[in-house]
Amino acid sequence: MPGRVEGKVALVTGGASGIGRATALTFAKEGAKLIIADMNEDGGHQTVHMITENGGEATFVRGDVSSATEVAAMITQAVETYGRLDCAHNNAGIGSRPRVLLHELPEENWDQVIDINLKGVWLCMKYEISQMLKQGGGTIVNTASIMGLVGSWSRSGAYNASKHGVVGLTKTAALEYATSGIRVNCVCPGYIRTPLLENLLTSQPEMETPIVARHPIGRMGRPEEIAEAVVWLCSDAASFVTGHTMTVDGGYVAQ
Image 1 (tube, rainbow, N blue to C red):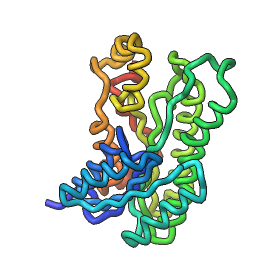
Image 2 (cartoon, rainbow, N blue to C red):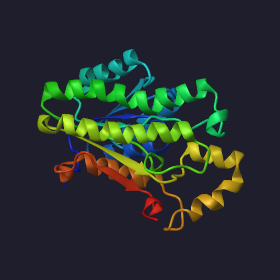
Image 3 (tube, rainbow, N blue to C red):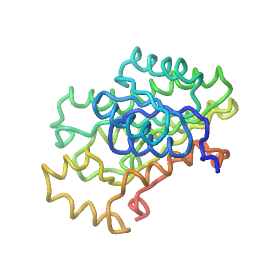
């Protein structure tokens, strides 16, 4: 039986670990060819190896999503390698550091989070959409967050602002390209056990209990659970879905 994205070409940014790696592996399992983009070369090559050792096709490209030149190169490599770009998961992102009140946050930290989490998504869409218009369509899924839908108690103002921006950018792009065969959606994960979160819990272990308590389902999520949502949104099964903000959060924002 063919996979849900059989024969399609997919780009995953932030594909070296966490949600990005899980999404890349799920895309490959469902028949897609992959471009894995990340700043982490070792992790990116590991993701490629995990795909190819199971018979899939994947290529790694080192890329900084906050750089227009490097984003353009990602898209160029995808097209030169596989001939087109059908699906894109704009997932690369960072958390707020340091976790302080808004008035205590250094300007350079604000700029870094916005550059990667929001400008990076815009740049990726800019070049992905240009290619998709040439070929007659495609699908894009951006990684936002539950923190793009609600306020935060965890002193992560820059992160929240960036993810609210991703939600708005997703809806706007969906409307602008709805008649061009390009669907644009986003996923809003709850707290997912990724290396990003594990690093936070290592430095602040007291946060784990209250984080879990905020999820009615009684646990944090797994990267694979977000990956399933992303691949479904990119598949033909979701052909009437665009501009959607899909929460995959164990009930977090339903409260």
